[in-house]
Length: 196
Ligand code: GLN
Image 1 (cartoon, protein in one colour):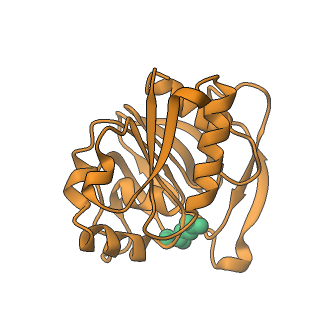
Image 2: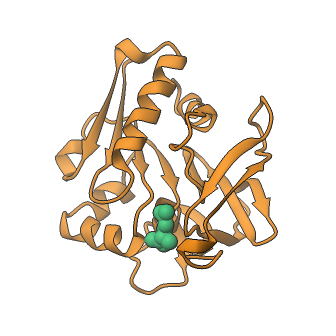
């Protein structure tokens, strides 16, 4: 399959996601028939099979999504969405911050900064349902958690503070940063979900 992956490139960890998807596509032997592109305007989404919403500052990204007229195109996007950290905040139905114009694509309630401030960032090895090959080294940077997930949401991993990995339909949301560290198992799982 010729696959095109868009990375929302308004603010945040954009280049890390590009590198991780390029690596994951190579590992799935689709490197030569695929493209990873940046998305800043609605036309950039054309032909994309998937879109990554990277980590960064969710209030800023939400404002830029509106400013760049991307809210409706992302909300109506027919492909899968891979949302990490700030992306998990954006993709939820409910968020504890009125400044976020939520995309309402995964039925969950998300608390921003659930672990505290920057200095409470941490790394830990966690089990993730459906991901073989042992624990995943997860990097949490001012991370959110989901405090509630609806019936249609599959919870893949949780910590004491709340849910940190979910899937709903073609979409996946993670409160940590799988694009850092070279382990592409979650990117690969997502790519397989969208038919790669
Ligand atoms: N706490 C940030 C927010 O809610 C997310 C942090 C991150 O993406 N690393 O916007």
